[in-house]
Length: 106
Image (cartoon, rainbow, N blue to C red):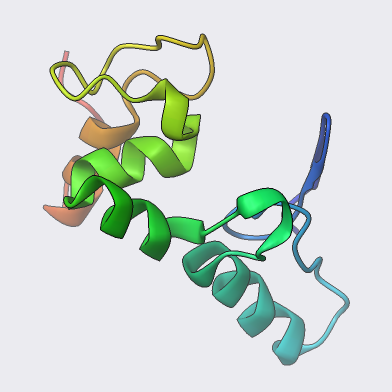
């Protein structure tokens, strides 16, 4: 089970969506978690991964916005954390996974 993180909003599910669906033991809830992450929940302006990619006109900048929030993106350095939120290595971790590397090289 994927735990829900709590802060100002809950971030449940496989993609940690903004106040999205939580797992309730059904296949439908798994599908809804993925939809919430990709398409967004619409709550508080949440546009999901798709909206972030469209807003920043690029996959990696969109991934960074999805992870850190739109204000947490420095287009000149996607590893920076201008708002102090998110994961500095998020984009490189995703790129590594997409190319078959499961661990980052030192």
